[in-house]
Amino acid sequence: MKKVLITFILIVATLLVSTGVVYASSAQDAALAGLKNTNAQAEMTEGDPSQTIGGAISVLLGILSLIFLIITIYAGVMWMTASGNTDSVEKARRMLIEGAVGFVLTLSAYAFTAYVVGEITSKIIN
Image (cartoon, rainbow, N blue to C red; front, side, top):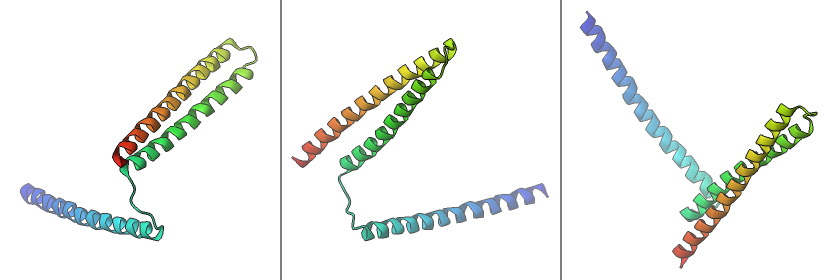
């Protein structure tokens, strides 16, 4: 009886897994068709991969810069409202330094990325 039950469970599990693969494949095809349709309606053409990757990295680094700027502003406000509490002042000072270092590192990464993508693009075009 146990062998029959285990065999039945294995058959049902195999059928469920194989049907999921078929549905996933058709869902992927439908999503790809929708993306192509949207691309055609927006009259967009496929671009240079280095430009696309560089743009994505620029957006990500811009978001990181904004986060570090917010941390720096928050630390400054925290320092100003510490009312002489040494622990709060030290915590705010540490946050301010870390936020400034993170901001400088992010800007440096942005500059490096812009330079590298520019060089790659100029080499590909020429």
